[in-house]
Amino acid sequence: VRVDVHFCGVNFGDILICHGQYQERPHLPFTPGMEFSGTVLETGTDVSTVKEGDRVIGIRNFNCMVEECTTDQKDLWQIPEKVSLQEAAVLPITCGTAIFALEHRAHSQPG
Image (tube, rainbow, N blue to C red; front, top):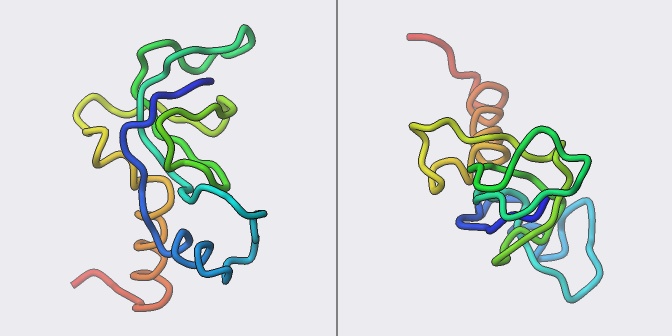
């Protein structure tokens, strides 16, 4: 699926990658970015989960801070109508990291 990238999350993993401290070390030069939102520009013949014009969020190991990206349909999810592209860009990784920090590190609880 080829996606017109509108927004890209910037998170702790990106900082680690840029400092060479992430568990995976891409060969230089590389483009950071692990999560993005945008609109589908084009799909391959075997793609059934999204279509041209759909608003999507997606994840990749790297290379999301780009104008367009190509990714597998299994790494994309449609964005609900009431969620903006800007807000959606951080849902896959950044929000998950924040929830993990609050629940497992800070031990947040109701009340």
